[in-house]
Image (cartoon, rainbow, N blue to C red; front, top):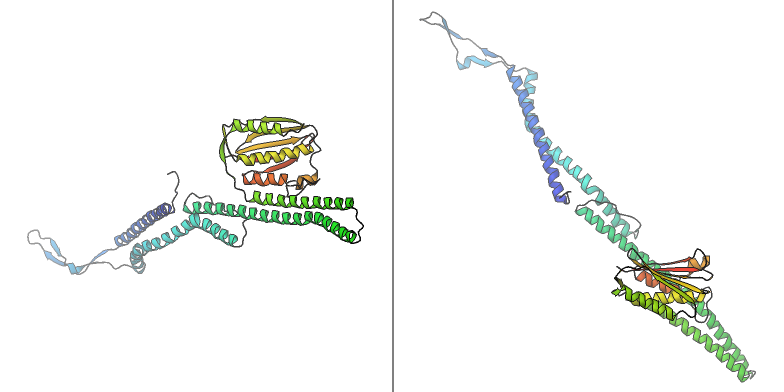
Length: 390
């Protein structure tokens, strides 16, 4: 193991180091105190009291007869006495003090280096999540258990944020959809009410000819048909919101050939230039979603192009990129802001309710990608759809 990846192991190592330091300090202290004590004892003098003198008959010399009770060590002075017994206290008390201080210091260092930062970040993260505040990051990058816990919590925070964002965007889209439905239904309903008032007034007075009556009924039928089409569009959007992406491995060469063949069938008399630079053998993709996006983008391009449409399919990292360009007037500033919103269209007609690009955007996002809308450098509009193929 290159690094300590366990709190338990790092704790064992910390306390082993602490024990070694305590043992070394205790040994040094005991040795120093013992040396001090020995030094004090060496300074004492031996005192012999009332020695008995005898004459050796053989030699004629004196023999000193000293009993045990006659030999005594000189008493220590006050300072030496304090130092001597103080050394005993040092030899016993300091190792205990080293143990207490060492354990406290080891615990404090271990907490500061291994526990304080991740615990603080986790506690702060839990509090902010409880307050529904997900705009923060847990940046602790330790490789122990708490580091893994912080990493897991950061992933959870990120997923919660994405889910909240998706939910918020879904609610906003639902609000826009409701507002758009309420706004766009008002016109055909107002038309129907006007025709009904017209019929009520004129039928009772017998002022309508058969031709005028049929014209009025025909106009009312057109308004009803428009309402039916509009309601069907709303149902389509609701179905798309609940659609499930089913990716399957597709042979890229066969897929591109099929796309090119379908594109040629939809040309409607305009020139379509098709190109691709995908070198993958297989792409993990929902084929029906890809074709639906392609058809919507192509229909839009056919409506606004003058003569020519360019379709290019390429790969960028993990995405399959579908680019559709036309040589029409391009997008206005308002188009660029709103073109992918539900029911936006700069020229809504009987068949066009402004849902094509919004459908493409929703399908791209469900497939793990995005939809980009921009203008060409020269002339015309450009829509880029990215689909995650991994």
